[in-house]
Image: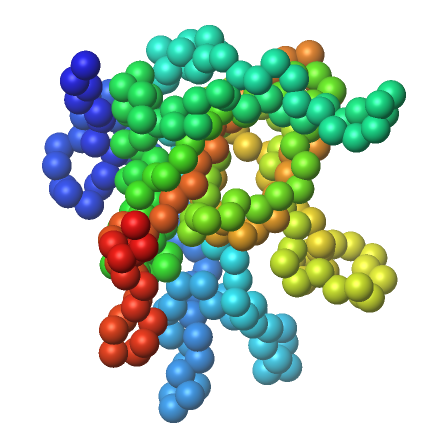
Length: 266
């Protein structure tokens, strides 16, 4: 079955498909940057926000973790119907007898994005992975989707804290979610055993961060970032599509002794 997937990439400068609406222009954001050691001026640079605190004091955020959220731009009613009818494991639980914890049910198929029914979803995800790699990580590597599966959480089900091994960038697409359904929760990789008592939480003193997602949104993040899903207390089922990725071809550089010849590892 041949499927012509929608091209979601703006990088090719091709005409956008019918029904595609360009989002309205956003108001200008505070310029991110780093200070030039010679001029003392803050120059544009992604990922290094500088906050002026008065009296000449400056606050930097070093080594921030990139998390990218992307709205799906077109209707996906047919894909959602297919996803709802896709079979998952009957039950997924852990713990002692009589005190079980019920976890989300994953699809038996762990390559769902290979299916022609989800060709448009895959094209959208691949375009956003490319943007994440080139514009945020400033890399020329091409990430390919390795595995992909569905997660379904009915009432009383959750997803334990975990990371995604053997993956570079992971992501979750949300075909069925809203504010009453549990968000994705991230845990800091730099959590300390001892910390200051905080009167209010912010980027610097929080151990966890919850992100309520909207219907059709995609979230991309480093695969080693710990995340989980709280218990679903709603009568409605929460459905998501998760995936992993890995750079295509060989990795590293021969001269710098970082070369990883993946073609020799088979």
